[in-house]
Image (cartoon, rainbow, N blue to C red):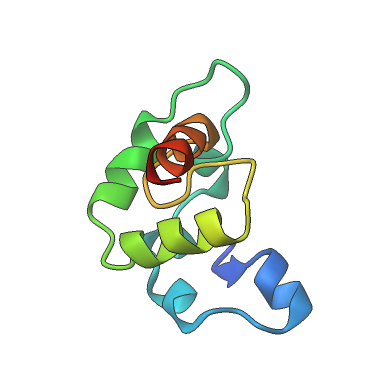
Length: 87
């Protein structure tokens, strides 16, 4: 997930993965990817479904234990379920 066309945490640390530059979320409203509790994730997931780096994004989120937002088309809850199934 990117904000305003730039990686959030990775950019601050100076190690932004190259795939983030190609992510569709870098061209959209970042608020869609961090909805308020009970808010809709539909728009973010729609964008993710068309993104060429969706798998890279999901892999990054799982590997870095991202706890907030939509990453690779999945919510934090969905990522937790996925991790349990694979473990």
